[in-house]
View 1 (cartoon, protein in one colour):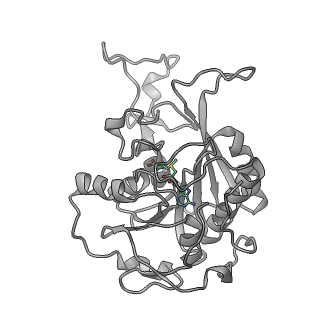
View 2 (view 1 turned 120 degrees about the vertical axis):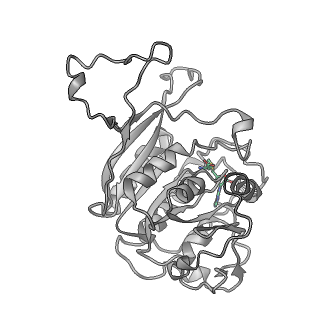
Length: 317
Ligand SMILES: C[S@@+](CC[C@H](N)C(=O)[O-])C[C@H]1O[C@@H](n2cnc3c(N)ncnc32)[C@H](O)[C@@H]1O
């Protein structure tokens, strides 16, 4: 296996305030590939970005990592087919960094396949994180795999760093038939007791199927999520002005969601960042916005232009 992991030397404990590794101390300025007045995206390995972020500084992390399915992410540089142990070791390294940079009461959401999710959940719990939910999201259009069950859901792991500092309830419109307009479900005679604002969001999401068609995606070669998915996670766990981190930018759905919800955001993407910039230009017409200077204090060492000190030549993954 040719992949080289760029891991911090030591794993960090839950409320560790130390910078985790001296490995990242060699200096090279890393400037944002793109920014708005609320967020900054760095074209880099997520472990390099993490190494620049102060402990206990993020309110929410949304991570949708490569699933190690041998997928081509379009940049020719990310080998998405590690040996099982190697993949888990890499994932544990960014999960550990996520735990370190989250504020007490902050939350992490990881969008993942169940086959990896149970390992991640056990690891997060071992790191002292509090289990909140295993959210199941329906997976459409897959096919049976040999002597296994038909895979029908993705998972979002939702953990908080201690008691969550906020939990905003989300309500969904009461589902109706698109032909006759009547309720789809019979509420057993209790319809009049339903909250007129809608139904409570449950841990089973059926309205979040991936944006499969190329024309609906910013980066056609990656599994871009509907912004609804990160949007819900951000809404549940943060308030206006909080800071959201997504280490795996992809097509930028988390950044779009954070921008719309008036949260600050920070992200990394190892492949091209151009589609994310174009997405923002399309959606927000934001080509000339001031830098989000508010974010400067989140980094160990960033100048007024949010240029970070970074290690040269770090490896992918
Ligand atoms: C599944 S996609 C994320 C999709 C994203 N959530 C969206 O909805 O647009 C995973 C992304 O992680 C990126 N990636 C893989 N390894 C990375 C690393 N070490 N650091 C930063 N980004 C990485 C890939 O290039 C890919 O774009």
